[in-house]
Figure (cartoon, rainbow, N blue to C red):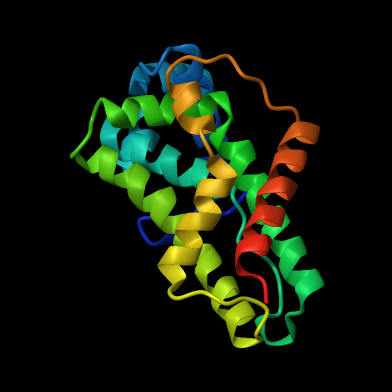
Length: 205
């Protein structure tokens, strides 16, 4: 089942998702050299379709960033009925998704490309759909837990930065620098649980 996301204010169609999946695979296999012509062949589509849906190459790259970021799901939880068990489960799911996405070859390729385009629309797209988007998704959960007296912290941003740092640790920078660390699903889940345990040790009432 295709993951849904929003591109330029519109919900993505399954076919657009298929094309962006192909773009992500091509991005890795080409060492970041994603071209419209290459994607036409890989996704069996026309250039006209790509330009109509995504605009130019930079628009396509921004769409792939949004598509990859959408794989970190927003926690599905009733914020009004939150308790420590449901809160911890939601955090664990978020942490597993985030670590799984960030440790993938696709995200490494996207982040390397963004670094080479720092202070550009592409670099800003990685920030906006990466770290900033993760904050927007998880801060309502943190606020709900604080309101229920499950957590104590001074600001949402402080709590989120701590959580994000505990989840990501040095994994992202090591991968960007070429460290060939491999994260199995079991390892991702273990690291995610450890991060959440440490976060709760710091902030749980």
